[in-house]
Length: 451
Ligand code: HEM
Image (cartoon, rainbow, N blue to C red):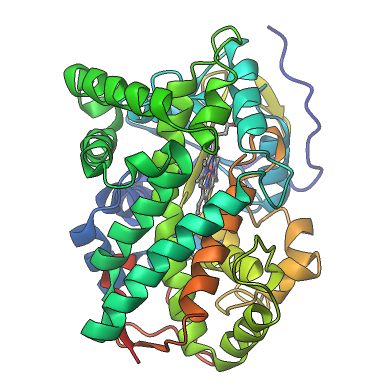
């Protein structure tokens, strides 16, 4: 096949290949932290250590050094006998995301090895022509372009009810931490995806959790086929019993479409909502420690009807900047489907292409937003125009769940902040204005005193 003609950025000459010492350093400072914290299911102990050592700061510094030495890149290297292309320039990120799924397929071999543990036919790991119908199911069921999904009233009802119960508990115990929040969060997720009857089906989320733990090891572990079959069967029963006001019903409406496999897509949604829950607690921590933004959030909530679906632009911007600061998909991976011409050299087919989101999101060390909480740039268009900021990816492989995530998370934050309670951050690590925000922020360690 001839090399792809996808448009090339025009800057700088062909980069050298990374040397042995650089590869070792890259493995130690960038790859090992990613693997030890758990790419598909975060490990609480790994996250605690990563936060203590601020491992993301080291990863970002490591990539900055590579850029200083090699220029814009992209930097080719071989790792474990396989070719890897490391992106160092935002223009290249845009090129790769815009060139999805050809010549840059999202179904990289590492991702297939990982996600096939629980979603054998997920759109993200589908190659070739079948991807189109699976991607379409996601876009249509999740209503990719609608800020308020048609299920928004049901989402608001579920979130308000669960947040009320959580607030009552917080008022009694005087505290809030991940474990209590996660129970309530997952109840709203199961109700949104599978209906009220699935509210307390912790077993389903537990089975998925065990498969995700196996997925952390990607190709290094064999498929857990028996557990996967049990989980998918359990999920099928739940999806078939889900009422009309659920995402599962929206997915099953596409079941007729050839090969779209709704169950794999629903499994991806359940998995991906976990990251959104972590983002809620991190955003709450930022709002608790940044009085100006905290005040603006409360003003926004006060001016709206708590019982109705709301777009809450400022809270959404706060969530977006939280995933910018602490991206929940730190490694955005693609794999070349054919030879690709890049600054005078040919990148061979089947090369893994890596965009390391924490490096791109903190930008140049002197970028005004780098280590600061900057929700306003999501309101005035600056962030959307910046190819370096990819918390929800971009191009034809952009996260189709972004709007439903922003609806769910902003409704949760509004419900918590609107209950008349005050959350005071009392964890070890405090992200404060006026000081560079931490590069690693462990959601399992976040603790609030509730007044
Ligand atoms: C904080 C929450 C979330 C963030 C930051 C996020 C971000 C992302 C990113 C960066 C990707 C691209 C991954 C890649 O290219 O390898 C992605 C893909 C995807 N996300 Fe999300 N996501 C979130 C939650 C969700 C939720 C809750 C859903 C569904 C309800 C969802 C549905 C999807 C799907 C289906 C894909 C695959 C798209 C494709 O195959 O082209 N995401 N997400």
